[in-house]
Length: 309
Image 1 (spheres, rainbow, N blue to C red):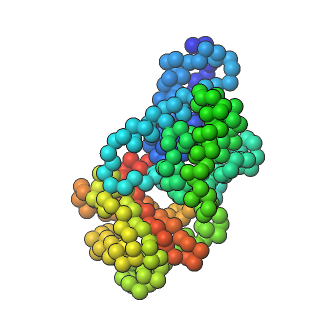
Image 2: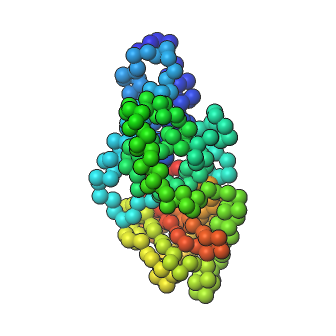
Image 3: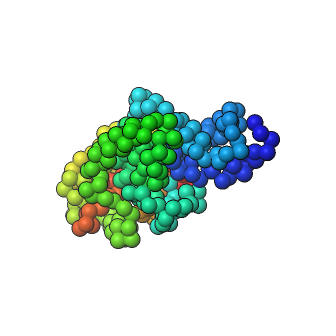
């Protein structure tokens, strides 16, 4: 280890880049925190041969290797109930810990940085293999060249091109209905959430039915807490689910509108109801062009909420 390396300054300078990569690779803020820590632990224990050269390429390679290994382990391990991404504080601008723009505004890649932390994008990434996910993020979000991507992932350039082609083909369904968090989409989402809250508080079933799309889908990631362990499909069933939740804990729930992952969401605090019930959670939705809710996502697992103050 060269004595001239200021690891504290290196951590401050490079953490935003590494965290942004690891969050998009895993979809989990807590996992990103741990992977970044592990990356710097390896830098301290086994630094690169040349510490006088720029550190970022080496750090990105280590972080990417760790993130791909983490994804492989996660997909081999059973998960109780549906898996959803971890919400983070991100509004119409990038959060303080996010990657600074270096080559355009905010990137010249296929997907902008804010879009690439949206729930819709993170969920779409789940169909990719760890290798495809890594290549797509470096090429289409962080604007790496084929050569830079090959160096970062320690693969050949032809391998990068083939993997990138397959990843883009797997993302075709997302690309047909790009879900970038535009101002218009934020306004529609906020209005839908406000109408949802109003209808639930008034137990207004016709208003709920009018707000929900016929094929609405409700998915809950409860983690260690009581939750629906399978997606609930269809307007009638989702209305029944929501009314049941309100009857159980509505009087003890304190919702607040916040902007997470680029779109409005409800951050809900709950009065203590027992060890099986989450103390807080996030409810968010996807909304169609007519303002109807097509999907509801509830995140209550404590490990998924470390990115929400």
